[in-house]
Length: 306
Length: 299
Image (cartoon, each protein chain N blue to C red):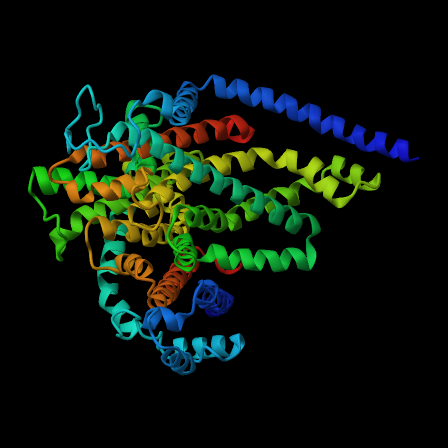
């Protein structure tokens, strides 16, 4: 198991190098001089030259990249052009809100997706199955930002049950989390259904039925334990989808998270902040994925020896 | 000798080409018997036609202001209502579809072209070329595509052209991986070996012998990608990173409707409904195509 974890940790290295190269490249391919962007186009050439020197923009690219990585490793992601605050502080201020939304949606989608998938598989080809699968297809096709708007109109404006100007706390989390959870729940429902249908045909399940076990016992202890393996595998992918979704959902519900910060940073051309957000989110995602993989290796010994 | 070689190459093509035609006919028959997929196909074609024929269908230009009819709810004259500048929402939805669907379709075309070339080269040549390309693809696939998208939009500036490039480029790794996998299986088939023995060039084998035979998974993956591309194009415009006002692009219309959620729901509801229907048709069609093109699932 230790070897598996070490091997999995080593696989992070090329990915982190790739991410750092990508975020470093953002500023390099951007048209225009970063010093001019920071100071505005009316700054004197002397001030621009001084700032370029200060930022190290006159150094060769490999030196700049080395410095960028060195500083990032020490938690220094630069300062926001706009607020002049350290980027890492800006991000850490907003991170709890995004994490809260992502985890709430992950929990909701997993519970709803697995439950509906199992129900659909056990009543296969009946109208309940058809209804759940049709619902899943609708869930996959509905634009989440639009669903958010419709929910805001219905529950915020017509029924006045929630505030439409954002806010914090559990009440403010319900609609965004539901909206964000719908598409991943739909994916999970489809996946769980086909996975359960595959396992249900196995010999050991037939044996469990034959020896007279109750229906619920067969499903829970014989079918689900094996059918859920592919579901755990896609947890990492689900996280990617959820993190992407927060960019849209935080904007619909005016939540002060990283997704909203990213959109504002892009609109304001605040490059250090954009680089910082991309780097930070990618690293968090990589670590979460690592945790999922280690957990998976723990649950299914076959993976460790693969 | 040369003639014999050409005849041989052509001969080696006969078998898979005839087989492919048979498979195509069989897939079409299966698709035609699937009422949901056919309804989705008809719906999508009608939507495309409505969008293409928008100038003929809607008498009102999408950006024509009518200050006598501001924020008017749906009526016979304006079936989808009007916005805060008196613009007809129906006209804007139809015209906006041109931008949303064009960008999504072109982005997928970019992704298919890029992914096919990269995947073919990687899978066909193998060795260090394959190892190098696949490590890069692994890194790109290892983190959320939204980050790659946002990075490209941030670097090139927010507009619809950038969204097209960003969407296309960020989908290339997925297509490359898929094509490479299919090539690895296809390159060991007899007709490929026959073509190679007869002296056909690598490019000839890759594009005329292997590519046509790996089309089914590519088509299925492309339709799934198309639905996603429509959603992301609209999503990025909605958060202000894609089409800019006064564009009637669907996501941009939703963005413009944000300030009127209280008094004019129709500004936000109809463009969203259009996105939903377009994606639903594509997803239903994609499910139907998968059943028709993948014989294993059909059984």
